[in-house]
Image (cartoon, rainbow over all chains, first blue to last red; front, side, top):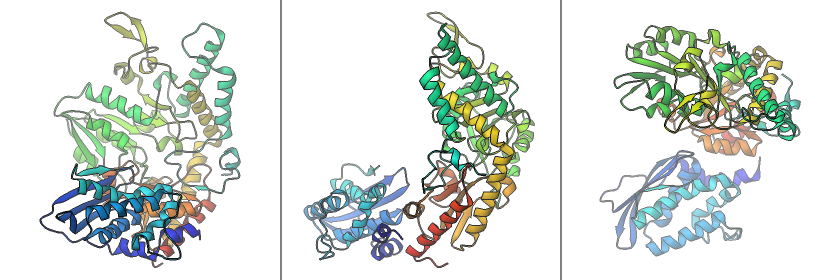
Length: 154
Length: 399
């Protein structure tokens, strides 16, 4: 079997695909955004409850491939309780991990830089799937900025 | 059918290409015909009085005659070159639909239509769209068609073969039902024409649309065939050069059929390529093409049935289905499946296949689809099944 596939479909990804976190409905939502990859049909919706500049609660809805849905689940865990500034930094690191030649993830110290989000590092080897992993983050961006409630990535 | 050697892209390529319903590969014969035209035969058609233009025009019109013979048309003038099935359907929706239908009329489609035979009809204002259902075995439900067709039905437009389910529809039976109320029968032949012998004199259609690129020809050209009287009656879709007779500042008259539907410089080289594709398919014989599809589809369905986690969406009866096989594997999303198969050297399509409403009807977001052409082989089917086993293992799906 191709090595890349084992890196792509790690146990963590499959666990988050089958048992997605933060799926429960939340009340008194402050921000909401819908994300959509029209070409492949992946969908992610993000609801946020804010406490000042901090995301105190998050709820995810959506359907799609394991990468998009696991990424949404992993993201929801990573950002809960974080400030907008902390989230922006995570987002930047995540984007670098997905797109940059520079390997920011240290194989000697798994999880040291981005925690469980590092499980998605293998997506980089599959360029057409990067947009699946990025969709939840693009949707979160829109929810936080509050400038629109829909985002489409391609 | 031992024809792989005729397809340069397949020679020495390990890829199991199972996405021919999206677009087929091209035989040497097509590539060479287009190459020769570009190198030594090219000029605009129906224009110049010089010899090269006259020869190009002859070649272009000869391609039209080949297509006409291929589908059993009585005259080449019944064959209009368009950009493809999509353009053909848009022409019909606009010029046979919007121009002629009035509020309260209805158009009958089916739930398995490709977006090309759905969205153009949605452009019609005040016209009701009705959708025929499927039977439990994914055949077109003729009772449903009969229930939907009434005296206000002006058009019944249905696929000849579903690009998702592989379902072949009984156009002659649809004709009977539509004929009771004098409705026009339009057949989306994008999948039908490449895979089955088609003779428009007994098909039962009034109009038939298809694309070259799915039948071993080039992109950028397709066909609208119509009954001569209807083509006479239909107004031009686009205005411009070539489609005119007399032109004044404020009004013009049209050239005869088919030229009144071919405004502007047509896809000349592509027409030559389509002509060569038709020659190639004729050489194989469409009965042999159909036999190959049936055998391969039968084999694929048999192999897929050995995997309990695989669900196939399409008829089990090989008589009413072609070689487009949609399926899912457990809870593995088709895009994941497609990535895993690609890593194992198998190219399939994953997604909604430009038939979103059908996915909703089936209650699934997407499927993976393996589809065949004349060069497809049992070995490729075996590799598909091997790839599916890899996917099942990765996603921990019990077999």
